[in-house]
Image (tube, rainbow, N blue to C red; front, side, top):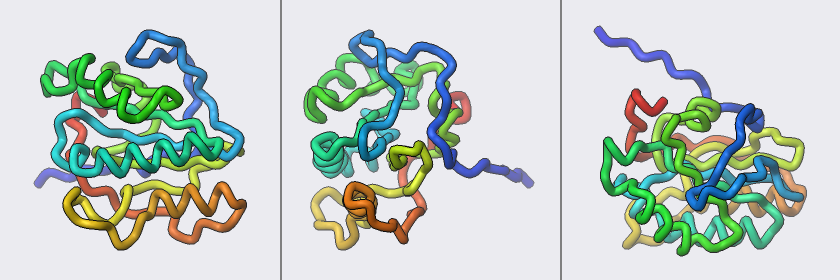
Length: 182
């Protein structure tokens, strides 16, 4: 029997001991914004990521416009999935917008720090660097259907208004990050 023990995703903003660069080789300022930070783990190949992509873009732009720093992290190696090539990431980054930082985590440094298991996964941190939400974007992985519950946007909206987030966790649904990348 194969037993897997998974660590819970991080509850605190991970300390970064090395210089991070985005997909354009620009140095990344690894910090929260005035209201906090949104960190999304996504890819260029996973069908779940692709189905949720438009809604991730909309929520990311909303967060950026409301004083959250936004980081998009691709935890997959392009050698495992060729769709995760740099040019594809740059094309997606252009859709997210210029204020959103896209990082290719080919060394799995951030993936390990966050202890995330699949994509897409969303993390929301307050300005004090405490995780206040982890989980799904919304309740509808099918891009052709309208979601009933927008979990991520709700958490960000409540946080931006200084209100209590009662729904801290929604189990993620998506593609497992290969063991080599965790």
